Length: 378
Image (cartoon, rainbow, N blue to C red):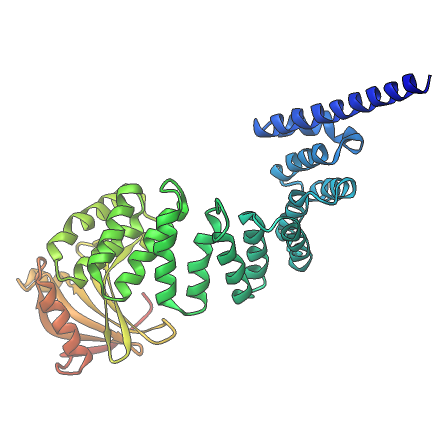
């Protein structure tokens, strides 16, 4: 009789274990098929009866629906039933990150890492907590560790160069952007971001050839990234290869006419930048022309160490000058509320080296204004 009872108990336990394995497998499959609403509607009320991993998948459905409170509730329930599953601690940490509770998130990431120190995701999540607290050194350490794991995810590779940039370590940032580019998927936005920053850092290093390579690849992958067209134009101006810049200028003008340009490109683009007396000069070209009225076409912004504009030098189209047979543009300057005019004409198809030389002469006070007037409101 005892043997029969024991056999029945074993049979019932086996059936119970099988049922638990079945519901877990069913939920895992539904989650993999992104059937989040189905999981929530059919299983959320019964979740407390399920095994820990099945509860975890119900919680993950809520996670994908950004229902943070229900995620925390279900991950707590899953952890209560099985304190050895690092995934539940990790997802609770991620949810706490989204909720801005970074200290609590760190607690749960560390618990996940304690249970499984081989998972790149856990260290990356920990890095996210630290970077949100602006603890950059700790974030850097966590992200670097994440990249050293088997099958590392993309995120730490994208975050490491940004931290080096924040720590004002440009050489390490550039090196990390190159590593990011070599590691992450070409189809991702992060790859585009890496290319953009490689182009930017190489440009700032005046390594124009490497900057050109990065921006050309970026434009090939993202042909509507018009900011990179402007950056590539600056590269060619840095190399004094002005003819190579022309096709990209034309594409910007076409995009402007089609209303595709926004934000800082909406009305003009930067085509060159150079230093003068520890100040950065940013040269912009306006798209619009205002025939029959005075307008500025090429504007050289003289900026201070804070990036604020101190004054401008520009090419100005004067209808009266054109009617009298003079060049398309004359040089002007707006400084301290006063407008200055310089009696130097600039052709429409001007030589840029000549224009830049004249701008520098004005900056160095080697030529004097022929007229001045107090500026009114435009």
